Image 1 (cartoon, rainbow, N blue to C red):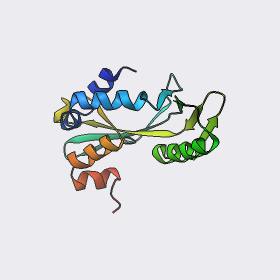
Image 2: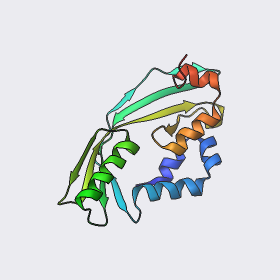
Image 3: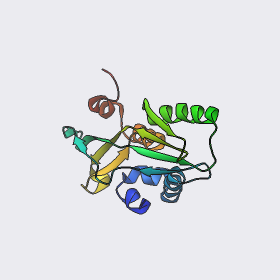
Image 4: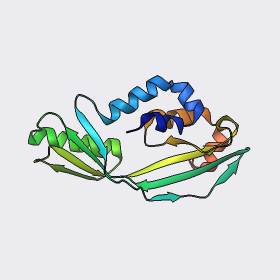
Length: 158
């Protein structure tokens, strides 16, 4: 849970737009808050790299990986509350594989995560990343890059 490293590997324009302190706070609250604690389950992630696309002097690469997560809820969940949380977790994680474990008061969520790696003048020619499963980071990507880039990467259907 080294959030400073995550921020250092994030696209600098996104970090500047959101604000480093706010981004660190959001990451911290995402992984641990009054309602739940979130933990990643794999120590080594099986990355799958797409083709590197050079567009308008910038390089882009989509990266996907299997990324199962476990949500530990702080308050004991009733059957009804667990069903509601399961639906919520399916929606926010874009996953149909959400399993409640009553004894642990937790959910196992099997999901695939997508990152967009970008190398351009703002990254000082180093790969920096957007987590496209994070609504704030996706919105930043959508704001920072123009329609032609989004279309060629595949975010806009032709």
